[in-house]
Amino acid sequence: MVYEVNRARRTEVLRLIALGLLPTLAQGPVIRRPHAVRVAAALDSNAWACRALDGLRERYGSGPVLVSVAGRQALVLLSAEDAHRVLGETGASFTAASKEKTAALSHFEPDAVLITRGASRKPRRLFNETALDHPAPEHRFHEAFRAAVREEARPLLRHGTLDWKRFHAAYQRIVRRIVFGDAARDDERITELRDALRGDGNWFMLHRKRHRLRTELFVRSQKYLDLPEPGGLARAARATPAAADVKPVAQMQHWFFAFDAAPIGAYLALGLLAGHRTEAAGARTDHAYLRACVLESQRLWPTSLAILRDTTVETRWPGGPTVPAGTAVIFYSSYFHRDARRLPYADRFEPEVWLDGRAEADWAIAPFSRGPAECPGKNIVLFTSATLLAELLRLQWRLSSPHRLGPGRPLPRTVDHTSLRLTTADRPAAADRPGVTD
Image (cartoon, rainbow, N blue to C red; front, side, top):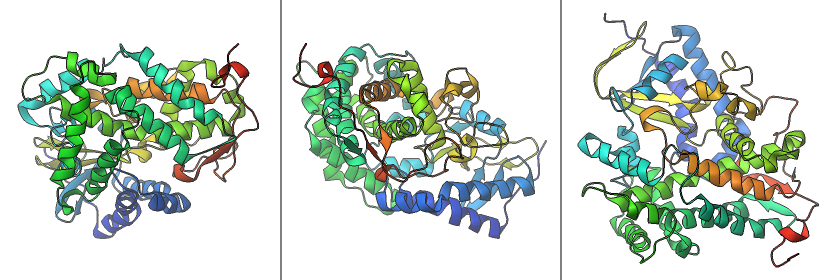
């Protein structure tokens, strides 16, 4: 059966562009622009985008709606059922290597599995899952990762204040040690190269490719893979069988990039715990609860503002349109993560939903995507962030910036992590302080 296409009106498309697309592009789809994040949080831009999507749903129902932007046909998802279908059929009817995503990520990781189509995707995905021990809850090298996290957390405990700059710098050292090994701890140049090219990626195909910088980035990455005794995930990568087209260093480069969203979720989780003192009281010794806090932070404020797919075949939608191959599909994360029609906890901090199975059962809540394209490094990220939170919660933190992260009223849909500040009057116990022994 062929259904009539639900096509948005011109005024509705303009509203979506103004309230959803432009704020997302301004903030940076690949690397955040701090000033734009600040403005978006002040305006609560995610809330306005969700209202625009609600308007489409009220007019057309819960089926997907076709929009046209700059000549590109895109299908906007409005129901949890359709979201589940798209995520579940990725690799069959849909591809994660969308046109826009490929244009952005090809600036710095052109051979990464996320933007690979065709025969190369399967062996690259297998390599990623094997090297990252997906879906095991802990990586085979988790003890080394834990040690790195604890070492980098200690300096953060010496001060009575914590801001994004200090937290982010510490987390970047952790990322370099986990991905490339301890030898890369102080290699700030490799992070600078990655972030410069990510900035280019924010402009998609509008920015020229800087091949010299990309070559330097890959040479530095390869150096850690070629060490006599590589550390971190480089060690796992070298021990994993790989066909010629897998290109292990390109997959490692994707791990290095994908890991960079983790500090945002972890820092906001710490802010939420500072605003919810009762929940924070016993959290430090409960690793599963801290993992749930990180997941809940990313439900409330997704680091992937939108999940993009392209159709690979003609797709039919019950009660909605039939669209050709090559159509973009848009899953606006905040719209599904904060859907009060389905989620009674939509706008409050409720990490318990990740412990009792409610959130895991709902595929429209997808902070690490779902299905065949789910992030294979998900458990490494959660382990790292939860371990760091456990160390930081040796102190009792309180919010010293005007962020509304406490209970009693709905949490904002958009938040500025870069201006979040925390303070404490505590000091770590003697045995916890660097240089102090029993």
